[in-house]
Length: 431
Image 1: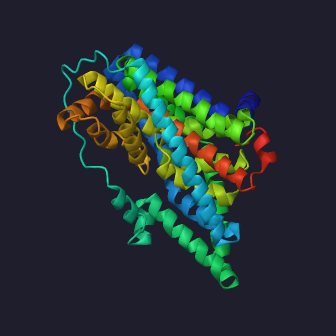
Image 2 (image 1 turned 90 degrees about the horizontal axis):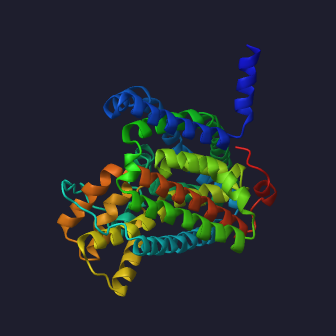
Image 3 (image 1 turned 45 degrees about the vertical axis):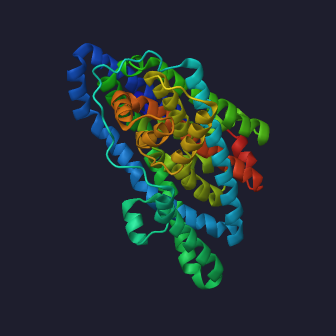
């Protein structure tokens, strides 16, 4: 009994990011062992029945928190600003930073595609075309959808942009009314603290949830996921790592003059959850918790910048779209001019903004980008059919990149606003 208590004490005494990393590594190892020992079909059936439900339950717990957490923390964040006008400055800084990093990402993707040439010599024989159902909404449709026809329906459906819009309106109204609205403001502020406390409780389950998710993924897809499209995977992973190191690292170290070690250590929990779930939206509660408790980003900024980032900051997606555009051009023998490269960069940047924060959402935007280089609908369908079975591990890295960017921009905005708690930032992660 004493030994068991000692093991539990050691487990909970370790920082969460270490426990998550152990869960991820053990899950991958167990999944590969089951696949080798039982065969692909048996391992898939076993882990789908006994492992995936527990991983899905963890993701569902996080998703449960997203809407109430975003709504309460954003409204409370506006209240904490003291002046409605301050929200405009924060929003402009955040959107500007997100757009600049997204442009860098797609340029890096194009460079990786041009240098490594992942599509050269690709054989599509035996690949079944798989056109995606539905079309990506236009820019006008996205803008109109920000205004909820029914705020309660937006809350119920989890429409994050609409929730953000309504929460900001509510926060501004409470600020303007001041003392008359104090009872409602107190409820909103207390609600934000309650949601953050629940988030901490759920995050204690992260190592277990990640373990079950990665066991299922490794058992069902194995290493063939990477070897089948090894060069494309190398382009995406290497490009994302370069983007994280140069763009986010440069922003934190060179522009903000802050140490990098604390930033990446403080974001590790969110990165691990992002990698295992492939969903920026599902990771949002963890990202807010990391930014607030590890990086010293105040509630007012974490509650406004991060929900916005989970919706419009898709650096990993834009990088991926740039790589896929070059992949398609090389595979189908399409000659691209300098103007084509510029058009792909612009289209991928704009198309990625507002992409749904769910697994494989970027494939819905592929047709938009490929149309700019002259790919036919049939070629686009062939591309989707070729990539879709192997997209999940690529999507995991893209999501990790997006979430890291959200954290970097939130720190930048807090620093520029003079509100970053550098004592908390420079301290070791506590989540």
